[in-house]
Amino acid sequence: MKITLILNGKTEDDYLSKGFAIYEQRLKHYLTFETIVIPALKNTKAISSEQQKQKEGELILKNIQSADKLILLDENGKEFTSIHFSGFIQQQMNSGIKNCVFVVGGPYGFSEEIYKRANGKISLSKMTFSHQMVRLFFVEQLYRAMTILRNEPYHHS
Image (spheres, rainbow, N blue to C red):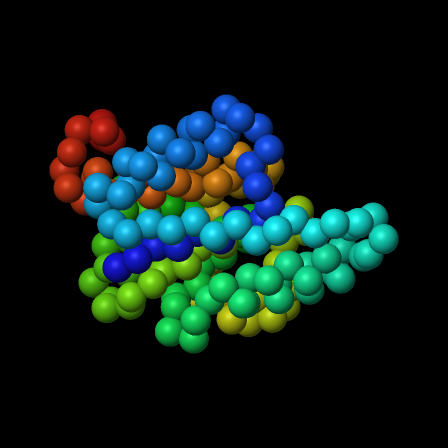
C-alpha cells in the first residue's frame, strides 16, 4: 500500500523541514510514501475563509483518484493511541486499497466537498497545532506505527 500525505503550502521553518525529512526517509524502509504540497493561496486577505476552503478543496481533489481512501487530519476526527493508530494502518494495508491519502488542511479546515469525499477523519490531539507542526507529528506517528507493526524497539510501550 502507498500512503500519500497532502500538505497545504511549503514548510516554512527549517527545523520542521529537517525533522519531516528524517521521518520521511525512515518511512521509505517500510512502505511507499509520497508527499504532495499544494501551493498556498495568495492574497487570502481578499477572500473569505469559505472561499479559501473552497479553493484549497479544489486543489486537493485534483490530487486524489476515485479509488483512493481519503483520511482528513481534522480536529473533530477520531483520536488514537500510537498502538491503536498502528492497528488502523494495518487495517488499511489489509483492506487491499492501493493508496491511502491523508490530508493536512489549511487554517480554516476543509470545504464541504472534501468532507463529503472523505472516508474518515483523524485527530492527532484535542489540542490545536499549527498545520506546519501537524505534518511533522503525523509523519513521526506513521513511522512509529510501522515500527510497532514490526515489533521494533522505537516504540517502548
